Length: 146
Image (cartoon, rainbow, N blue to C red; front, side, top):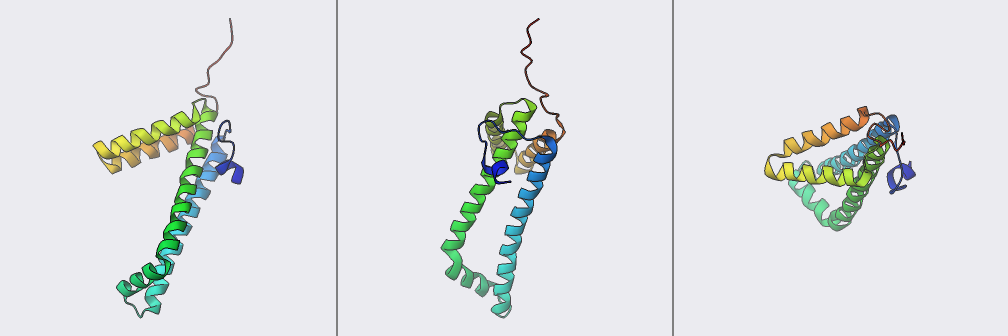
């Protein structure tokens, strides 16, 4: 699994179902991290006697910088893993992997900046679902001489 997320950056490929599996696992891990954060805030609130503001202040003072560093490392890891499996899946369909990912990022950023965040998320979701539906080598060039 580590190799799928953080290995074979230049030439790795992923079929449709392994791509789907790794995508679901990645989203489940992100959800688990967010849930753990919410549980930590809720536990601190309970310890502080139900005062959410004091609980947030206490957490900010005691966990502020370490938590931000951990959050940053986790988010960078998630983005690298997501971009890598997307590039591998694009490569499997015959598209240039990292160039495809860079194009998605640029187009999404432009859509978000110029039009709306919702349109940007919709575009990214359509691309992700499209990668699930496109068969392997669908865009591969045939180099056969007649």
